[in-house]
Length: 186
Image (cartoon, rainbow, N blue to C red; front, side, top):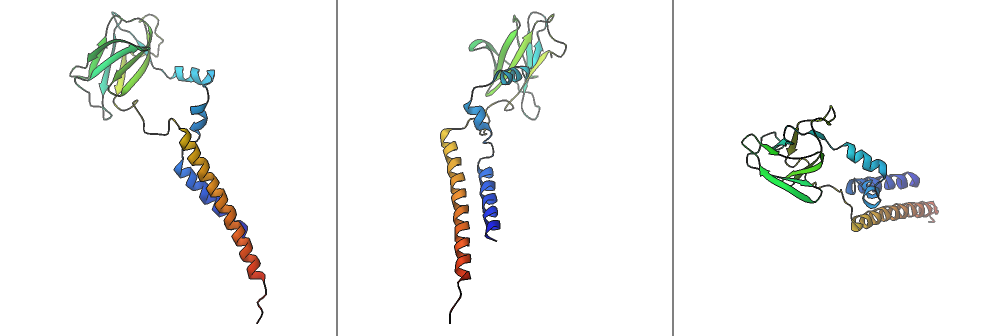
């Protein structure tokens, strides 16, 4: 009977830990160097865009409900260098002219999109002609994306407390069984 209580205690402790720290699998990604395969996978997730006539990169800014944003400030960067900024028109459309192929960051507010831009002649068939920035969609997230050392220590403490508690319950059950086995004299 005491063995079953021990197993239940461990299960409850692990369930509580899983609720408190649901994304601990991110610890390895946050603390280790990214492998070449990971870097290549990230590169393949960058959308391809084809420049239109005059080396024009255009796109639209909207909110999460799909409503276009008139007058939103849009900034174009390549690396850390800002190449220009503009505002959206009444249809939420922006454009930057005179660009060459390369990787560009387009941002508006806290939302940023990274695009691999191609000239019209060299663009792959799947390349789109317009960028789309959805406000809040690719901005800051309130998740455990970066795990701090204090979070790791807290998780280790919770695990240790769960194990110690489960062992203590098992020992108490064992002692309780021994006490109950002592014959009572009258």
